[in-house]
Structures are given as structure tokens and as C-alpha cells.
Image (cartoon, rainbow, N blue to C red; front, side, top):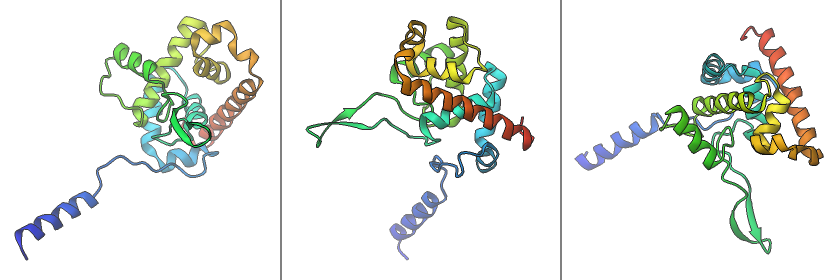
Length: 195
């Protein structure tokens, strides 16, 4: 066997061994215990964020579910002109937390986490903790209040303070679903003794 062929085989074997980012999403997203059983790394990230920022695991999980369905590289849909010509995405939101470019940059500067990536569950979880802690400090919404934290997360703190969410019945209904899922996740995590 030639050296070139051997080198190529070794390269293929090494590449096949992985080491890359796990892009798979958990199954059964309505069951918090199933999610953390399938993805123990998620639970470690959520608990670390809870210790650092005080945002409960269930609030983080409900937010990520409603933002990205736990898809690491989730993006907003493309916009089209005349129904066929792509004109970019609806926003710069990306990753588990659907953080916008500017907010992500602010997070990295304030926390010193310069290598943070939006498609890394640990960084996305930490971002949510940072953002929700800032919302409690600046707007007065408890870190445990999944509904109003979600509204402030979606509208931005300034928009939330102005009450922009009150003119969006669809968003209020969506925030109610976030709160309901958070309560479900919290109960499930207690039952499977993850809390």
C-alpha cells in the first residue's frame, strides 16, 4: 500500500472518530428528564448557569425550547422579495438562545467570555443567565418569572419597559405557553430528582 493511500486512510479514520460538535437535538422535548438524560452536558450547563446567575434550570430550558427547540444552529427564516429572491434573514438571531449579534457581542464584552459561541449549550445557557439577571436588575422581573422574562427577552428590556408586548396578543399567548412549559419542566425535574 502506498504512503499516500495509508495517509489518506488514517485521515479518514481520524475524521470519522468525531470530536466535532454534537448537532443532534434531543427527542421528546416535552419531557425535561428525557432531555437531560439524553444530553447530560445540557444539565451540567444549566446547573452551572443556575449557580452563577440564579436562573432556574426549568426557566432556561423553557426559554431554549421556545427559542430554538434545542437546535444548536437555529436561525430565523429567510426573507424573500417577489416570493423567490432571498434577501437575508429576518434577524441576526442564532443558536440555542437565538441571541442577536449586538446582544451577543455585549454579553461577550461584559462577561469576558470572548470565545463564546451561540451554538454551544454552555455558552447559550450562560447568556440566558446573564441576560435574565440584567433584566431583573434593570427592569425588576424576577429570574424565576418565566413569562415576563420571556417577554423582556423577546422585546428587549426597553421594549418590555415601554409595554410593547401588550400590543401583541400572539406574543402574550406565546409567553403563557413558555410559563406553562417551565412549570411542567420544573415538576418533571423534581420527579426525576434532577433538581
